[in-house]
Length: 97
Image (cartoon, rainbow, N blue to C red):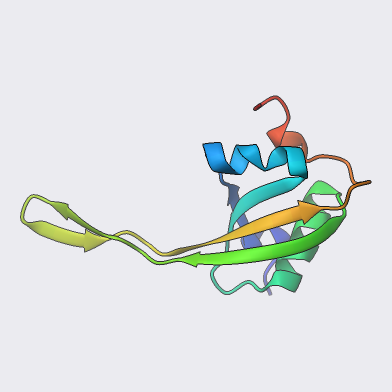
């Protein structure tokens, strides 16, 4: 059984993800096998907010070279979580703008 902390790995902190905070959109790296319903329940449980919608994006790993050696970075799944208008903001993102 997956817990909420297994599903949500970490927040994604980039310029693009920070620009969505004004529209109540937050970006998290999530478990590859997690679906939208599981992600919504996990966010609501961990942060105590009301989620309006969840959009997911699967990012494939990229091939990288280090001299003569080649390897692949791991694939990841991102979730863009939109909160309801009357919901409180997520605390870990406060003060980053």
